[in-house]
Image (tube, rainbow, N blue to C red):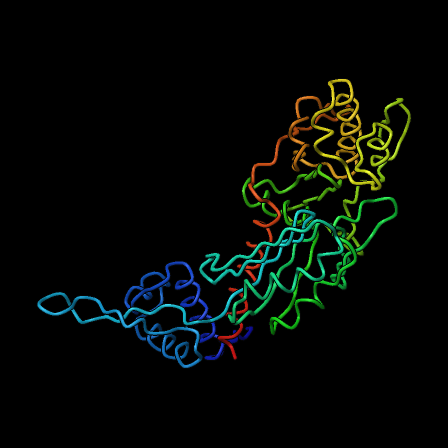
Length: 358
């Protein structure tokens, strides 16, 4: 007959504390009686949990009271999260640097945006935007979205041959470390956009094709973004597709042959592309179709989602290969920032739960 090991009192306490914390994160303020209902815990257990969390500085008495007396029961105290800190969310894009602070309720409590005219400005603008957004708050962690490939092991931005370096050489971890005491998580903007699309659509297997000044792709399989060994999965600029003359051509070169690049750069001139005639747009759409065919062949997505400033405009012109797949426009507004913000919120809440365990 096997022995069943009972959970320790310490484990039971940590589970109770987590339930109370997450309930307060969801509903902002509750009495101990309300917490007992929302968590399913007994009133004495909730009382002890609240006491511990108050002592740890994670929960505070708001000073508000329920109406009691004359048949209304005892007066109850409302509790909420204390001043437990925020997560810093940063988006680094060709148009500028945006920094936000998000609290454990999911509210954006501050925001700073600095436009840039040249990638060389990013290293100087990033700490300024961070200081303005933080404004003396306790920052537990940072999540960064960058419009360039990211080395998953170091968080540094990576330049690939012949691909536009939209943001430029940068180590966001090193720049942001002085503003917080926790980790700095950096990922490519297309990966964050795909995570936001996954949450919005509920689709577990899809490819997210970003078509803007740069070309990017994120592969989502079983609900997870696949980043590859070094974090460079989905960098499709050099994927071979159909060129303007009908021969095999790297995807990025299609835009060079059509005269759709920015002067002195491999970055795509979005305004010029959107103003192009139907013949040029058909050639671009055919090249996209070749990329989609490759994605379907290798990854077997349920749908290919097309986002970016010009991709959805060509949606009706895109045709796929022999294995038909749905091609749809991205649905999330500010997808990269939305995806990074959601991840930051999840990490912040987990950090608070871990703090409750000492």
